[in-house]
Amino acid sequence: MGKVIILSAPSGAGKTTLAKHLMANKDFKLKFSVSATTRGPREGEINGKDYYFLTLKDFKQKLRENAFVEWEEVYPGIFYGTLKSEIERIFNEGYNILFDVDVKGGLNLKKYFDDNALSIFIAPPSFNELKKRLESRGTETPQSLQKRLARAKEELTYIDKFDTVLINDDIEMAKKEITEKVKSFLNS
Image (cartoon, rainbow, N blue to C red; front, side, top):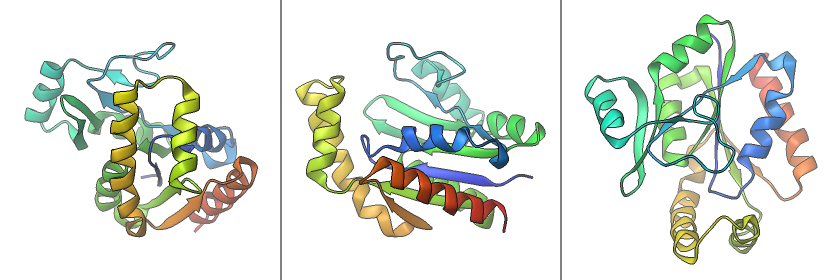
């Protein structure tokens, strides 16, 4: 079995940018774990590449089949989860797994994989900076922005439960730091 890297962060902290950076390092032999979700695809997202987009009915059927390693109802009626079949596929191909998941999902994955996983919490330099980043995306309605900010406040309370914390104040420094942490873990 390979090793597991878990990146978790509040929305807007930069975890997707850092995940893409890690994926570009071929020495790490990382494959991205594609999560399942009941939310609709955003512009440009592809089923099976960005997410497995499932109907609520299909997601609940998979829950009954015990098909998930972890899952969560992140917002009312919006579920996310990690399929066991996805993990088996990646390990069978001889790769390590990179997860880009919400905070509770990250903690559940860490519990599942234990010492075989490195959990990294990516934190914004400040709550105000996080708010600015979310606003600058231009993808949020005032209501969805408030929902994301309320969730971010809660997620920041879990920071001490992760193996390591990376403050994403300067993206180039954050890339260097995360590369070193992952390299050290994979070579241990």
